[in-house]
Amino acid sequence: MIITAAVLAEICSALPLSGSIYIWAAESAGPKYARLVGFTVAWWSCTAWMTFVASNCQATANYLVSLLAVYEVDFPGGIDNSNIKWRAFIWAVSEVLLVISIAINYLPPRWYSGVFKFAIFIIMLDFFLCLIWLPIGVSKTYGFRTAKEAFLTTYNGTGAPPVWNWFLSFLFTAGTLTGFDASGHIAEETKNASVVAARGILSSAIATAIGGFITAILFLFCTPDFDTLFALDAPQPFVQIYALALGKGGAVFMTILAAVGLILNSSIAIIAASRLIFAVARDGVLPGSHWIGRVSEDGQPRNAVTVMFVFAASLLCVILPSQVAFTSLVSAAGIPTIAAYGLIALLRLTLTPDSFGSSHFHLGKFRKLFYLCAAVFNAVVFSVDISPFSFPVTAETFNFACAIFGAITVFGLLSWWLLPEEKWLRQAHLTHAKHTADAPEQPVVQT
Image (tube, rainbow, N blue to C red):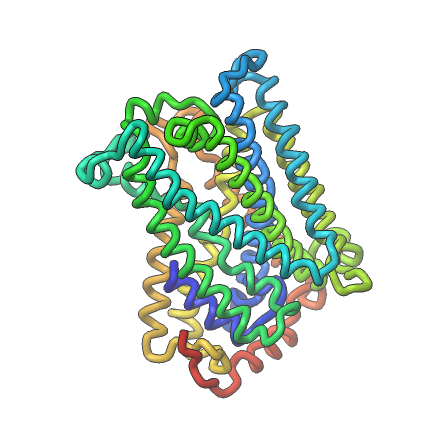
């Protein structure tokens, strides 16, 4: 995914535009297929980013409500997703967390830098406490797993063949394999965006890779044995792992820390997603585009943020009738983004390998190798994400993400077919962007 980030950084540097990913895809396709690809990726990206917010809020709620299991609270009907009262409780908590995440986006823009820095502080504090405090707690309680248990022992709870069961482990990292294009979506609000926004894409992927690798190794050694691990019944089992290793007080502190980090994560995702929605509305493709595409006096797309709130709040309501339905919806959140990453790399390899000469992050002689690697790897991740998560497949375990992705793609194709060229993604606009991106090559920035 670092290679994928490098491919996107190359394009971002040449075209630092709000809502950039669908423009990047359109320009990567060349003039003949630009509008078709642009429409399709616009639908993919809007769906993915708006769904991320609902997913994040429910994930935060799962952390907080899992404390009930730690303190053995007797919840009416039991702590179980089949219990409508329990689902209603999670829904209510998720909606409150959504309101908090949205409210942060109505702060004055000059406060955003402080929000970002505080978010980084909270995330790094959480990371280092897991790296230092958690191992100390584990050593004093249930003990570490051996190297053999950590690296060579597997558990197949999916019913899939052993090889595919291993591939399904990509689902564990699905949340960290997407979203690093966010800095590109706020490029028009970034100083020196052709360098800063592009560098943000690449550096965030590198930081996630390093931190994620360390975290994965840490958890392999610090999780309890399989019998204990799979007996944990909270919506977020890590809260119970914290309780086993650090005691109830430690579990409360780490849970609150994680919840604050996730709330800030959601608010930052809303900032990126609202800019994407604003850009699509600015080009006139969404219902109510004239209102959605407006900006406030301080230049902020407040109406797009409101749209985000309405969509996410409505999506969270799906928790009430069916937890399975909501899981299927949020599992589709990452798939369109992965598809867009892979498609852009494939188009760069096959149709426009010599474009974007104005980029400060030009990949030079290695570009075709990078395009090929990114296209293949994202295809693998995409196939895992649309796969059934357990076998044999039943109505309760079916992954509806493939059907949702197919429907989104159809909507994109219909939009391309029905909307006239003068309405959205005019050819003249695309041609102008292409000339800008294909200006003489700039010196490569060493990172």
